[in-house]
Image (cartoon, rainbow, N blue to C red):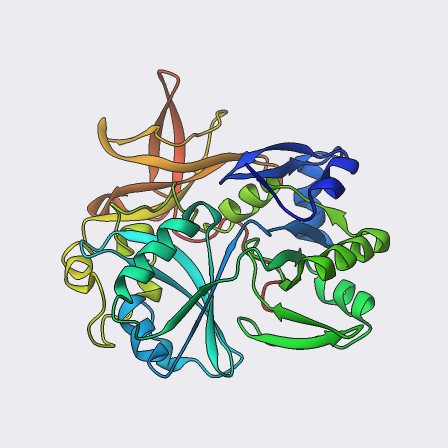
Length: 357
């Protein structure tokens, strides 16, 4: 089990630390999940996301290689742009979802921690002819996420520099003669930034954000915040047996861009199942695997579920048969042998956020 470079700081701050994706990670801090969620929605919080994987791909054939490897259209990217995308197998199943960054002479992929080795092996296999240069730089750098309506203000305060990059773009800055990479991305639905730098630099930045009063937040609140926005989590809402359309990722699937791995199978399955949100109308906390019923028939299963401290009710995501999808349609969820009423939602549960501020 690995530790991030910030492990001792989490321990000293009193975080509850548990194994996650091969790392000892902070799950929640002493003030609690409710406090963390509200702070991110209303002010600013900081997350350690150093467990995420980082691959750099370079070489003259990089764009052509990635265009076939990934489902989104990377020809739309300019230098300094970021793009949410996914990588599929030959059956159209999602190997992983990831963010791609276009640098001056290379591309950077940020992948899920639990899939680092699997992803690297798959990309290496696709690169058997050595079309590109592939490097796993995950252990060389660390990542932190600053999220919330006041995230920009907090970063500008620490760096003493203006941060004005647009949504899904990145900039590279020099801070005390140290190179830092700042992308306007996140997993909370609020205005947010993710910062990548050397391990030593991230330690310095973390301390400065904490000294500024930015609240440290764990993975539990991060999970709730992403469910409130209907963001997918690999291993719950998608996996290698599920296509992008079945995970509500049709919007990043560029079927018109030409051939890519899994394209034909993805198109064939696009009308079978859909990923939707639901809100509990009665008391009950939905969990992964619980059955969804409509008109006394099972139409799908819960993929992610939680109790939302902001909405003060149970919410979740579910994969159901496409012909069963109706906005605000009432359904039943089987929770501990009891049918509990809920309502389907096709849009995020939190409607007004600072995301595009």
